[in-house]
Length: 197
Image 1: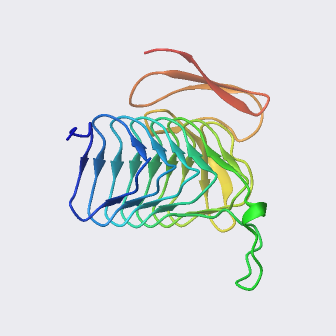
Image 2: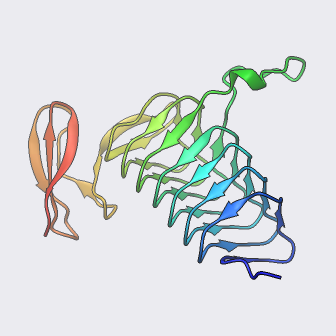
């Protein structure tokens, strides 16, 4: 019998066909469906569910009690905080089947989704964006945006390291990450990294 390249707690259910990368760790009471694709060095905490049409990149951390439903895609290095919520149907009804109406959700590289936040289906969360605990996201989020509230609003910009940047919400500007010294530029509503420390 071949030894899998990942580790899984005996209570985890991993359906035949699931692809899980090397170094990934699957904890207590996790259920990974057979069509799921999970990258290398990921961590799936207790009571995580991963649907069939789910793609999870490398080095993602999915904390306890998170369900990643069909048509959700996480790029590399995404953090999903405890008990945060994804949806895949915009207007669900128990009496009406809407599996053909799933809306895809994309979370780009390095984004962090805080504890108990909700990501309404059909949105894209930009690279290294930071969604505050309890926020409700119902529209696309730019790269490096810091979002809080219900419904979420942008209150600033955040570095790849996770430090708030001294940049205006509108207009142009440049700022250094206070921890790493990496420089970022805001131009025409978009933030980009422009040089290493």
